[in-house]
Amino acid sequence: MSHAIKQRLLSSFIMSLLLSGLMSAWVTWLNLGLVGDFVSRWLHAYLLAWPAAFTIVVLLAPAVQSLSWRMLGGSPGAPRAAQAGIPAAEAQASNPL
Image (cartoon, rainbow, N blue to C red; front, side, top):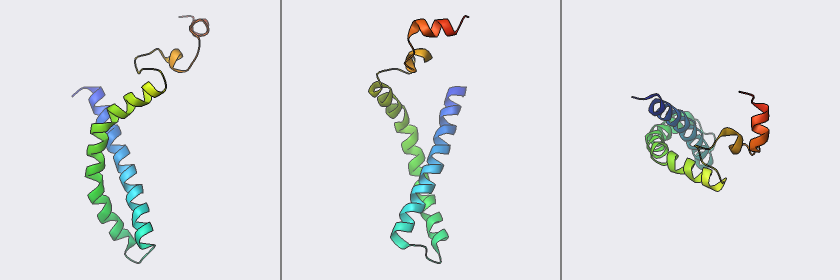
């Protein structure tokens, strides 16, 4: 498995854990309030939400990243100076190599 694929899967894993955990806690709190069995109900919702969140992130992240690049008028392959909006002459002057 390539380093890029490992990074994408790890990033998707972390993002889905965080989002599904926070969103399920938020929705559980909105629906029930801070009841006595809040943690067990939240964990149940979290365990149901995480696999869906992971699948969605893995499948949709590339399209979302591509869309955001197009909306910003750039591309992931563009030089870093161009992505940052630095004119080419200024970028060359600041990088003598």
